[in-house]
Length: 95
Image (cartoon, helix red, strand yellow):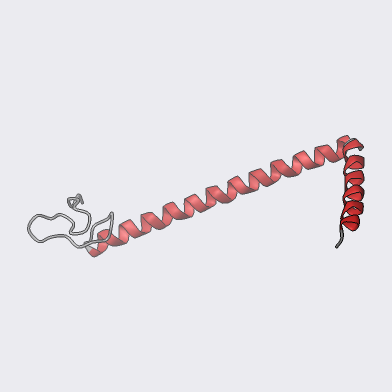
């Protein structure tokens, strides 16, 4: 592409940009865009909430299964025989 082609394309893009800047947004379209943005934000917040709830349930399940196995509820490590402290994280057995 030579410089004259580039200059022509630049001028045409610039003119197109100026025309789009001059066009007023129709109020109905603006309302639709705002409503779509709100719905998208709500949907994303709901997805985040569901993901957090699933993560919390998984952690609760892991904690209960570790307790049932006689392991540390925090890291899943084994307890020492005499001190009843976890060999991995050092926390005392509190259940």
